[in-house]
Image (cartoon, rainbow, N blue to C red; front, side, top):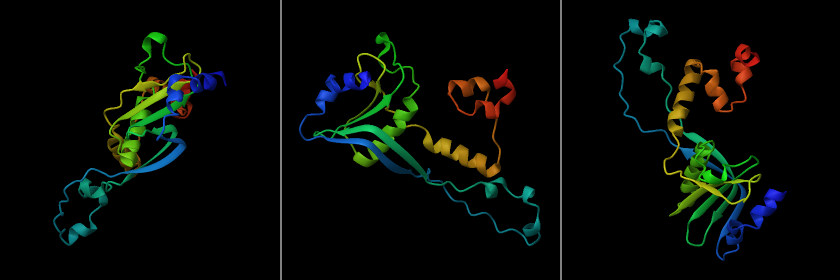
Length: 197
């Protein structure tokens, strides 16, 4: 509650009283992300006996799934459309923020999340300028820490990898230290022996 009070009494919150802006709270959006276009090569017609060949002897390209459109669902804690057409995205965090000397969000923990938010906001609002920032409610002062999100996240590549893994039912193992760095909630499921140790 003290963190919320500090945020509401800060400079950014006071700027929300400017005329002509629109404030969205808990705004949910669904953004379609189409797959990369690819050239379609018509395979040669099989000979009669090849129709009955085992599946393992067919070309791998015939077994690859067709790329699908990805639907990105985002829920913004706070999205502000200002009168000049610029957009601010703010995400609240109930965790201590960066140290006072490192107020740039350079720890990178939330960079991917904010990049996905920025991609969705650009698609729906077409702003001429967009800022994405974090408000750490347990830090003082409670002002947004804006993060550079110029590059869009590689969502198409990740979706294609996930689709291929589900299609082939092949899930390559990830080292447990990488799982822990990602703060994955399934470490004990994938690494039961190492996690207990």
